[in-house]
Image (spheres, rainbow, N blue to C red):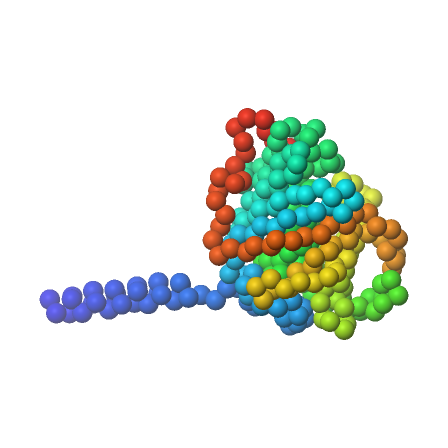
Amino acid sequence: MKNKTLTLILVSCWTLLLLSCGENQPDVRLNQPEELKKLLDAHGDWQKWLQSKGMSYTLFHESNLQQENHFFNLTDRKARIDAAGFQVGNDGQGIWVSPNRQAFGGQSVDYYHNLYFFFYSMPYILTDTSLSVSKSTDRLFNGKNYERLEVKSSEKGYRGPANSYEVLIDPETGRLEWVLYQVTFFNPANPIMSGMKYEDYRETEGMIFPRLITGYLIEGDTALQVRNQVSIAGLVLTEDELENSIFEMPEKAAVRAN
């Protein structure tokens, strides 16, 4: 009887130990290449990104002063964008737009719904396990020499603006200054080379985000012309996911979109 009791106690202790170890497993996203860690460190306390589950901010299109409020879950990437004439969302089942497709007016709701979230979240989003980051040779771009990282999607079906990116790092500040990418979403056989330039960095709770992001048409090693420009303010990161109701497709005046 004593042996049986002792065995039960040992089994119970071992089970508790295993559960305890499982709860304290380190986040695999902490294990990043040294080149990426160096970039992340230049952008402040990047581990707060790993601890956050929700995100919201206000985006302004500088060309027409249109305002949008963006809401995202960092865990499952559910999304919602509220603009003056439309709403766009991802409820986990697919992309929706309200009140109708015509109200959005853009080329693709799917492409747009997480476009600025992805670029605004750089370089923190590079810790995502579905992306692989490696150091490449320096690149001369717009007459300036940059350290360069290559980023590729490592999962089939990864939902991002492109499949690969070049991250150009300002050698003086160590911060992200350009992201270059080929837009294969619309025409894979003849992709458009585009770039996003990051300017006017601001600190939010120890993390450093750009206030201004400018999109360019790229040719070779030159930024040819401005395509769009947005400013972003009011960033909030939360330790909990946002309310699921935020992302739900409205029952009326909404359709699935691509």
